[in-house]
Length: 198
Image (cartoon, rainbow, N blue to C red; front, side, top):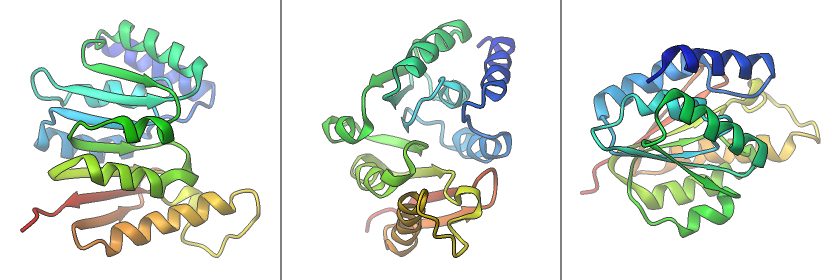
């Protein structure tokens, strides 16, 4: 892996205000990935490919990351980035809307990382639960959304996103098959471990 190139990609994304995973969030997830050594990771929301490239370092031998992105410009950039960092054999991009693509996937994943349209998080959760392996982990980034989710924020523009993120938190907290913690790293990270089914 070309780390220097990865660092350049990160810097360019930050300069251009493209949302990428924050360092402290990445650090927390990396700890889990080191332990799990996943064969398959599903990422919902590729952007420029930065998080997928970071995660690829922790895959088991021959492991794969499937990542979904609908923005054509971002897809183009992600493909170039992934090639330049030298991890194109580990990352597979599905091009299109995750809402349409997810129901067509039938693979089983060790890890799911959700970082796409905030208003769709409950739907992403439903699909993730269908495909996650026993003892897998689902990460949802930006779950506290600038603090709005835990406050009494109710401005019209972000109302749907906030309502759906609250619903996501409620579902993962109340689901008896999940053990969930919400961390205040980055913009909030929900970590849901799948309990072994009896």
